[in-house]
Length: 332
Image (cartoon, rainbow, N blue to C red; front, side, top):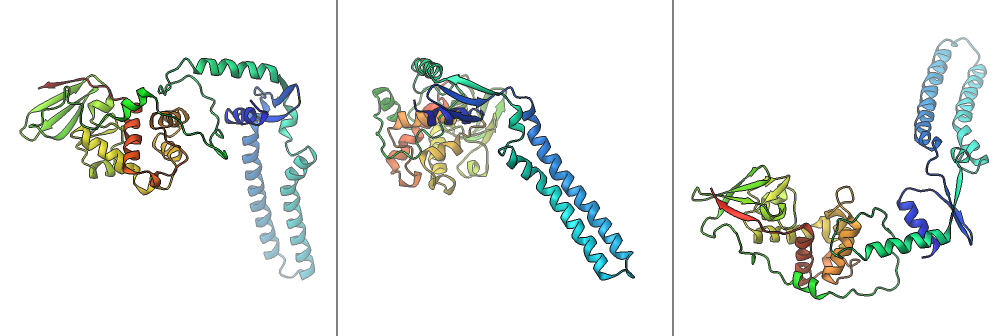
């Protein structure tokens, strides 16, 4: 792996890179304590300048009001001195950092050298560990991801769709009739009951979805949150913070309609997934890789360019990734 890629991985993990030579990669000691004071000092300095400015301005105003009989030249000179003083105070940190190479605090941190050979061995071990995982399993124990892996490439090798992935993509919505609420009892309301969901039919009968995954219990293949959009798409309640739809087909239509909205249409598939499954809640990079593997689509394509058939493949892939595992339906 080239040094630029290693630097990118280290930056993504929050390390400060200082350079490299033929034998070592140099970085700032991540245990450097004084680095933690950097943000505090920045805010403190800003507040100090602000307070000093107010005090000097007040003093200048008082001086001017008390100098009605003074000569104009004296007042002008005093104002010039005040501006000069404030300017010197503001410029001091900039000048000091310039003299010390732009990072005064960093000068107090140690530099550590990591042999490139060791880095290569660690990365080889990481790849070996990754190969043990299911290609579609998102819950990996690896936090460092390469943010530049698919950016700026001049060539792109279209991924092939494996036989297992093809079977997943051929699953049609609403064909999972096992343990499904009877068709003659169309749900009109959903009630959360612990981890279970109770569906109230138009005829008053109640059916409880128990076991399985949240996506199945909610008839929500994409685990869409309960919002005004979900209500417009036919949601009849909420459970676990997610929308509950009367049946799987309605939930799948909601996923596809959501991906066609302006919040997603102008993004690439990778960008859309980043919004759909943000890093704050998901392993977004793994989610993107799984979408690519399952659909065989170039994730740098725009969502608006996808045909209806290609959108179906993305929606079915999301259904699989979010976890669709049926439980049981009990009549109450």
